[in-house]
Image (tube, rainbow over all chains, first blue to last red; front, top):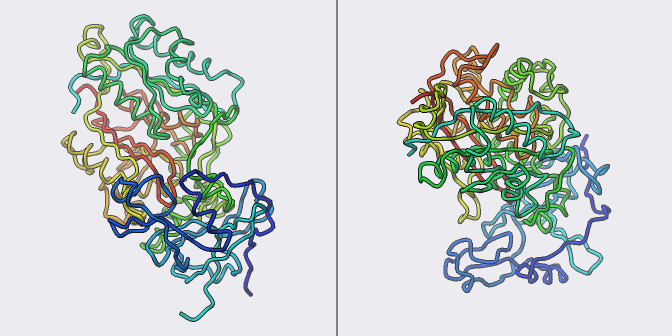
Length: 146
Length: 389
């Protein structure tokens, strides 16, 4: 028998306070688009958004690029004890996902069973609507054919 | 690396679940004990180095405010805000200041009552990139770390349980440990303890408590002049913060202790097999095992096998956290890094009492501090101490 993990979709989250330099990320989520920083000199993506290039320390080479958001589970944990407002919503899954562009992203993994979650599982973005019109990036198993 | 610095006294309060005392009363208790033990007068202390404090160091003037509260006139005043690396880092910075002639006798003070008065005000990635996902903090980070470790190397949970049991046995011999934790456990208790963030169990985790500890550091010459024969000196230290910071994806089973350990061992002229007792920072049991690997006691990925073949009791081959570690003595907030440091000093001074280790040639103490985004930990420290070098 498979055990569905809770998706925490109905948890009332606190509003997210974006930093000045991460606003392009949040603005793009309004259209359910995932944009992440790219250092065009170093030829490398980076995540989470930073005030500068993690590769070179030169912020002038950074730009935002849209990516598919597809990737695979790098690691995960099943949360069995949580604090409010997540308390009572256990078990839910926190996963580190390696995007195909080579960055790790922390998010909930939803719409899956406990048995299904494993390192290497292919995932795709799931966008959770926020009251302010932005979306929170989550992941779900990628059920499309590659 | 170090030529003159010497620890001449150590002190610590009992670790309690919640204290009624003010954090400065905890500090004052440590100061009084240190003055009594060392014979120094308060006016002779001209250096103050603090660890962070969840209770206090949200105040950006914490070290000077504490100097004022304790009425210490000092020529070197500093706080080391490296989380669990604060206490080892504070000792080393006090030693540096003494070696450079900036001060002659320093108080290293670690005082925190995070359990009863947590004033931390964080400004980091979590509000934006972790808390919206229900991220609870360290147990979740160690859940992610443990699963990845297991994926790469396999994880022997009975081996981790053995570490938990050994530390608990030591806590039973430590009257300053938190009473709630001073009950024997078995490997089965460990395996059956409730899951917090799979595969992190309750008995993998520290319990946040209140408490304080501290050291008096001076020069060997001064110690000798004053007839303080029992001294402990640092002979090697290494520190690494944000290991692999420039890379997007790192092997999270590799930690900054790799670099910190190599530096400390090189300075001390020692190898892992020379270490007489091991006092690693323990916030989660798996961190002890991973440090054994990174510090070179065994190969990367072989930590559990090494644990299985090693006796870590105070009477054993490699005595481990002989006062119980933070996991079994309680974690006094950001002062918690002082617990294992103080125990190492106590053992090297031959004052371990009923848990005294036989081999007091040296001791290895470590620190772990802070949890970054999607990594293992922010700061790693390794410190090698020896008596009367």
